[in-house]
Length: 132
Length: 132
Image 1 (cartoon, chains in turn yellow, green):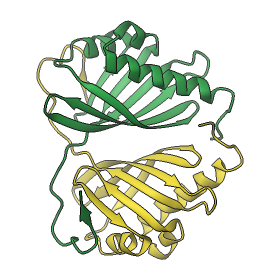
Image 2: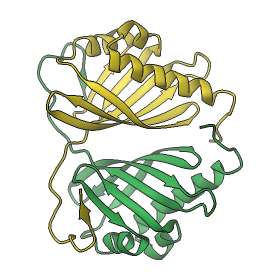
Image 3: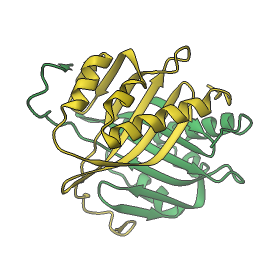
């Protein structure tokens, strides 16, 4: 769909607030970005969390500490995608998060998130590829 | 940045063409979406492929056959993101792809792609989560 220039800046701010809240552990601020019936989906584990209360609890209870940097935000209201990089102790992971928002409330109704892990590439393509 | 409603539909069409070409193995069509100096990046393996010729060859030589469905496309010109689902034999994977395009030529200049694999969730969150 064609983005709406009037709503897109608001959505960009919402996504920015979401990640600021995650990065600082400000879960009360985090909650203000979520619709009551938000659904959080992790296709890799086939896990789904329903509702703001459960999803906020999931984050509040998550063990350890982390630092998250937002590397890319793409907004096409009422949807958005981010690519983030999170450091948790010695672990560093990129995550990709797809958001859907309710145009009426401006709040997040669906989040689908991926946490890909590093792996060794298959042999046979070294002539086309550089490693970094 | 604020999307440009005049260029965004064109970019959406380009991304649609890119995935149609991948899905049908139409590599000549695929090439028409790429800038000569396109860079393809796989952060999981820390692999990088430079240039249309090498990236096209990488795809033309990729073993096996696949079917790719586009589940989500988000466009904010000159950038876009997609979430796709690919079936390769018995393997099914979700991929997330971040595109940057050159506003002048309308062609893809940067692609960063993730191929997360399924994993078993850690214990301790069953009370908040349903599996599917």
